[in-house]
Image 1 (cartoon, rainbow, N blue to C red):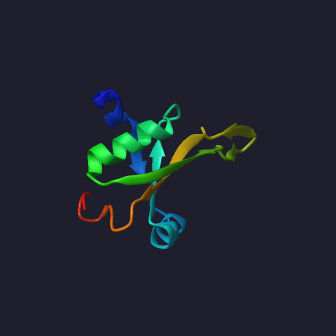
Image 2 (cartoon, helix red, strand yellow; image 1 turned 135 degrees about the vertical axis):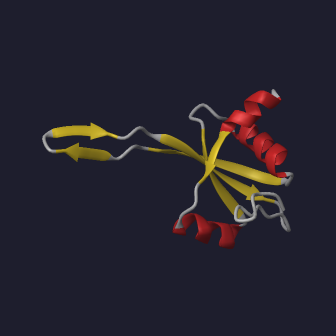
Length: 100
């Protein structure tokens, strides 16, 4: 795969209460990814950037919420998230700036 493309696949880690619960229970990390990313690209990007081994990747499309500003109804844009399952003993620590 193209290394330049892999550097653009991951947008940000998804840090939330649910993401922390999933990380503790299933050894998974959740990332916000570009909308046309594939599982293979996400796996390659995580292994390249964080130097960890990835066991599997699950993807989900998140629909944008409906929002209103007075009479004007609108919608936030949707996005894609990836649940990255790490092999046992692997860990990504975002507090220390990434890495193992």
